[in-house]
Amino acid sequence: MSGEPIVILGSGLAGWTTAREVRKLDRETRLVLVTGDSGDFYSKPMLSNAFASGKSAAQLVTTPAARMAQELNVELVARAEARAIRVADQVLETSAGNHPYSRLVLALGADPIRLPLAGDGAHEVLSVNDLEDYGRLRHKLEGARRVLILGAGLIGCEFANDLAGAGFEVTVADPAPRPLAALAPDAASAAVAEGLAGCGVRWRLGAAAQSVGRGGEGFRVALSDGSTVESDVVISAVGLRPRTALARDAGLAVNRGIVVDSFLRASAESVFALGDCAEVEGRVRPYVLPIMHAARGLARTLAGEPTEIRFPPMPVVVKTPACPLVVNPVEAGEPGAWSVVERDGGVKMVFADGENRVRGFALTGPRAAERGAMTRLLAA
Image 1 (spheres, rainbow, N blue to C red):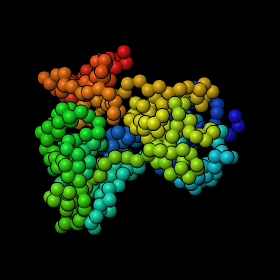
Image 2: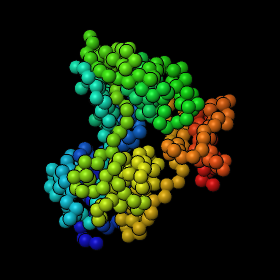
Image 3: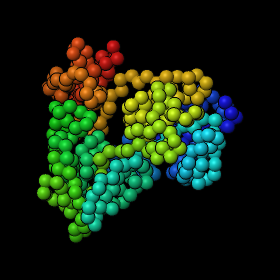
Image 4: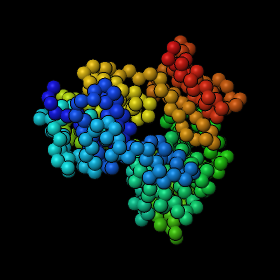
């Protein structure tokens, strides 16, 4: 192992948590954290439910970058564009200079998927993926009344609940026949749809956005079912795509994400990846709990104790107060079936395999409080 530092590329939850976990085990090894933004630490999941509480972008910052760097004894290189990884001589090239590394951790995150929309207003559709995006959204919402959200997945539903709670007229459009179609089973997603409708959200399901045109002071959005929606602000929440270009250009194996094994090792020596950008043994694991779990294991590997990452059951919590949802999803094609166990006081569903073993669950409303008991059942 060379005397060069561990270099972490990315200052989101994955990057900073890896730095924190390394420091719990090793106070001496140089840590360099390179980021394209300020490096301020904040909870990214808060972006989709902070408006109703009146929080500005600055108020979402829990720890300024300088303080994070000081507390963790990290050399912070902020506002630096990563340009190339030279894997042969272990150097990260950036706009702020070259950084040799003993080990490189890619915590690059993901980019919003941009819909191929026609129309003279398409370039004004907003996506919210970081603090700067959130600041732009808050500015656009000043004086607005109608909001159209494209995408009825987790982020779209959370934004819909938050903005409806703040008094906006919210419409959600999605080509799927129900919200949360890729995450939750039908009865659970129907409960969320009903809960959000109860707080004023209007659903335009089975209809994809095709064009966004300027119309008066706002926008006129044409949908695939032939209808139009008029809105003052249009938000795209159709999903994220792992950032893989840097790794691909360096010759690393890339599929949906940067391909890593169960130790989070990429296909080049001394390079690791985790978080939204990584594909761990065939799966992208973008949620908070898997990222924190992976960071703890990776820190042990970086500290000289190679540690295989085995993910325990980690249910996803959807922040929709109008109808809370907790779901432990199952992989597409996994043998078994969903069934409704109970409906009173909220929907409770389980996914059982052919031997009647529970492999997944979904809980809505007050049933969400059963998350701990159901998770322990999965782990048994």
